[in-house]
Image (cartoon, rainbow, N blue to C red; front, top):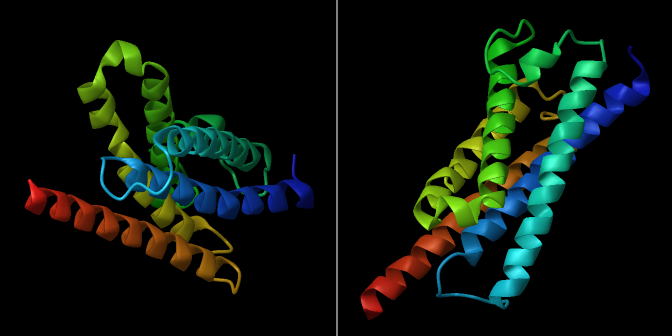
Length: 179
């Protein structure tokens, strides 16, 4: 099945997904640790969980519309396995990798009590890899990434995450100096 609605839905969910995914990761970066907390912990964690759920739902909508829309030949297994794609295989594979890692992070978050803090944190760090794969996927396969709308979205997302990481590292460095 192919229709302009599916095409625009796929494109729209891709850009919105990148922005929401970025917000999720930025909030996760800034809400860890003790120093530099602006909001109470329950507020940041609750917002982070809500954004994580929205990210996952948008990610699933994006993958489903990519598979259902036959304008580009993407099969259902190519949305789950990061290899074997025929349409821009590297970039499609990176999108699939982002999907798989995001689902793994989400699943381990639901099982955090059973896994323990250390195992959960190890898997949760894969969010950085998932986000990076998503950005490269967007740049390589996203039809809007080089448009006047898409380019600023990508630049703001990359800038926001870099700023959050720099801020987090500064907070850690200041905390290490005071102890």
